[in-house]
Image (cartoon, rainbow, N blue to C red):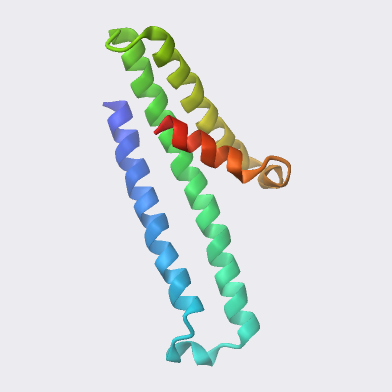
Length: 126
């Protein structure tokens, strides 16, 4: 039940992240009502939206790590799949959530660790 709850919250937060990307497209589209702003103000708005997208996506990844770790633990206990595979899933899922959480707590860590590593971890855990 806990893993399902985390999954629902994860899905809801990632849907909001995706829909906020549409707002960024609207800002960058140059619609008529945006002529009230100067170019540097629009660029600042777009940059703020990109930064918010990254932070919200990391929150979704933390929840995905929690959900996936809990489900892999259930697989480990149930023995429906080989225990080594379930243990590997727990490790990878926990690592994804921990890395995403560390990017939230220490934003300057993203300068040290390439973002491709997080994308790789998220693709293996799902």
